[in-house]
Length: 469
Ligand code: FAD
Ligand code: FAD
Image (cartoon, rainbow, N blue to C red):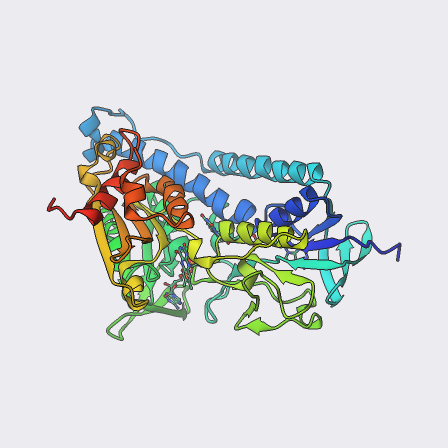
């Protein structure tokens, strides 16, 4: 074997956790190697956040045009099409792939500028600091001073419904060769609903099967109600409190409904989105002397594992499995290695469901605040009373902005919103929490008119002086 590489920092995994860690380490002058087996950008860029949002956008455009052609409610704007739109799915997928390719090239460029050496291949550790990478040109040995593990996650299969044939994961759903006539979505978490709604908008019949008694069970019921309403109005069939147990002899999906009876559902594609699991196998984790926390690698609030000078970040270390959490941890670890004092605060990770309508959640919900023993003010401002929402046709679906604040000192504990286009409020929500804002800070910030952001200030004002709307 040729000579061994001896970088100061070795990062394994080029997703939003690993590539950000490597880039930051390089920028800080550390000699850094990044190993990636597949493509730079990881799940998020290649088969997650970015391609799904591209599909969701395209599906929205198509649905609007389809509605204009049939003279539905959307025609209130006076826009009509004489013929229904035609979907060229191959071209849509190519457009989505083009965005992925462009960002992938961008990540490679950023890493090169930060002087990070990228090695393409699968890394396998023999001890905590030593690995061999199987590259196209043969094995490369690496012995590093410090190691950052960022191997990410993979979709969880159902034991009686393994992936293959008509049973697909989000990865295959994002590169469809043809539009399914009938798509069954198993699991109404955010991934299943985002994709299920996109396929419905593109013209597929969609059935959603969820084991819990409501959709998006990780979010509070008030936030998910407008999404449920949209699903019902759009004609998405919902089986709640129902479990999928497998396929029958003719390929129908066997669903055990809430009351215990068994139903056979015929669908030409079955999308299984029942969660994701950390990728902990096949790369020698067991040789590294790190501890586990359930299926995840156990870390402290600086992402240190039980092994000295080995850190772990992103989906590998637990919930929430979100790209911006992975990146924030990657940035932090690189800075810690460079000698900075940093800590990770999981309470500051906001999240968005890009459903119809969108949901944003930052900090504590009213129920979570109560469970944490807080005496909280909960103030709600309806989007129906926001001018910008009306101009965006976002006022009629029961959307709102909600603020949760401590009664004693008005510290904002949580901010949530549901409604069309509310995703872009996530930045303001996260900022308010990170700055330790009180209701007065948000209420007295002069928000630009007309914007959805005004609804955030209005909710804070109601928190200070309750009014009847
Ligand atoms: P990953 O992105 O999974 O990257 C890990 C990388 O490590 C992979 O590229 C893998 O090839 C590589 N690797 C693993 N083992 C080895 C090895 N031994 N040697 C070499 N390379 C290795 N999150 C959001 O925040 N917003 C969203 O809108 C969003 N949408 C999503 C939609 C879908 C359909 C999916 C599936 C996920 C979505 N996510 C979203 C979640 C997001 O993709 C993940 O949280 C994020 O990618 C985690 O980043 P990571 O760096 O920890 O791991
Ligand atoms: P999940 O969200 O886990 O959804 C899977 C669904 O499938 C579940 O509702 C489950 O009941 C159902 N299911 C399982 N088995 C079956 C079966 N046999 N038949 C039918 N249904 C079944 N993500 C966010 O986007 N935003 C957040 O704010 C957020 N906060 C989180 C907070 C905590 C404390 C935790 C633990 C997770 C949070 N997540 C959040 C989830 C995110 O981190 C996960 O990565 C993500 O939910 C995985 O996507 P999913 O949609 O595939 O799975």
